[in-house]
Image (cartoon, rainbow, N blue to C red; front, top):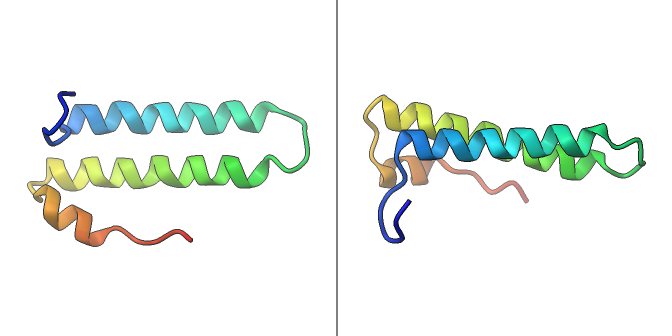
Length: 72
């Protein structure tokens, strides 16, 4: 994706898949204390999948941004 351009649906889906894979990778570790990073990665992947869906349904980038929530 070129800097300054809005991400395409495919770009957002690819990024969501990377976050989902990262969440799965973190979840493979038997170490305690890995739940929060895994959940944050998974939540971000879900948000990206929803963004891609909204974009594919015709919503513009500004409208989608207004839907975003503060996870903190």
